[in-house]
Length: 168
Image 1 (cartoon, rainbow, N blue to C red):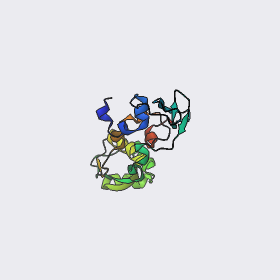
Image 2: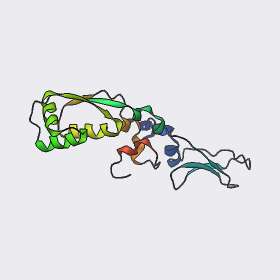
Image 3: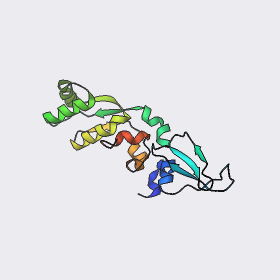
């Protein structure tokens, strides 16, 4: 993936470290430009001097951790469906939205609107698209498009980990 496609990820220490984009810094202990960023076994970042082995522990947040997008809800507006939706699809969608199957069947015929957390919205949108259920959303920014490096990211505290089904 091209760096220009990385939007917010290119500003993240995890991305920069993985792609060798971080320059060495001057070590406060020995004064040489030999302080380099590393990622520990727990996934956290620290800087270590390759000359005198001084270590600087840091507590930082990545762009996706600080993004208020993950604290918001977005609306999904499901259009009234003209075609009959299969019973299995109605049941699965009712589980996804935590609504009764009877209500879901009626709501699909009439159309409905529901507020959804960012944690669940992508999965729901994919399900609706896969089953050709017409909808629209007020979601302004798609986190998967905003942080496309999330599948390769090795930072265990990334807010994008919610989209890694079965890899957590």
